[in-house]
Image (cartoon, rainbow, N blue to C red; front, side, top):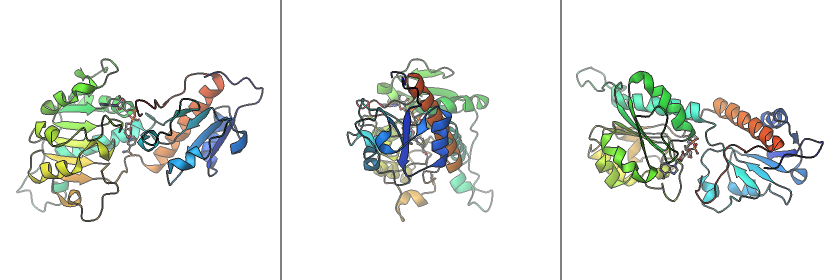
Length: 309
Ligand SMILES: NC(=O)c1ccc[n+]([C@@H]2O[C@H](COP(=O)([O-])OP(=O)(O)OC[C@H]3O[C@@H](n4cnc5c(N)ncnc54)[C@H](O)[C@@H]3O)[C@@H](O)[C@H]2O)c1
């Protein structure tokens, strides 16, 4: 990215609606907030999350578009991501809160909270120790890097799936293509990968069969990483310990879906990123990327249209 050469701060449009917090974030990074037609950068945010709303903000002058999400499969699968203008996601920005949620789901699995919270006597005594568990982090990006140190006090053995070289602090690093090798080893399989054509359905019947009989599947990535029908079968037949899912396919999970009532399933309906934490982290990311845009430094979260994240 070439540095801004104008005397004036580069014009950034925040849309489709005004957002005072993000506009302040733009100013904090050294940009000025302008209308769509004068802007060289766009910060998109929307409650409806319709990709068409973001492309409607792009003009011939646009050099950079910032999206509010860490997972951008709706943009990549529709061929909306270009390299000019460059598009950035919020990948990694929500790591602390989503890692915390994944950690809560793992503990809930170890303690079998879906059953224990409804038990009225201690006669069927659910749960086990989490300490000492083997944890597979399938996908090791921003969330994985926040989650790994949380496991250290519990003496967990951590298997990290990544192609970015050895994961510092992990007991073993496994290449993306070999993620299945972690499945028979893990007490907790935690899905943290981006949803791409390569990762869609990466946990299906064969992978669930490869997991330990008492292992829990935790998914805070995207519902499409898992074949839901195969998961329902595995849970119904008690072939794995359980599943704790913040994200599902379909999403939202319809009323009456078996995952709502299976005793070994725990659903949190995509709430791993609480609004206040989300907004603060997005504003921080916007400020940092505007600062980098002004300085001509590499932006954070640049989306690779080929890789899909
Ligand atoms: N539940 C929520 O509220 C919530 C919040 C934020 C992010 N997310 C999801 O979590 C995902 C990860 O977030 P992040 O901030 O860590 O993003 P990130 O871009 O930093 O990490 C994504 C990781 O996926 C990995 N990956 C891609 N293809 C893979 C493959 N074939 N096998 C294994 N790993 C693969 C990449 O190597 C990368 O490290 C996002 O893509 C998003 O979909 C969910």
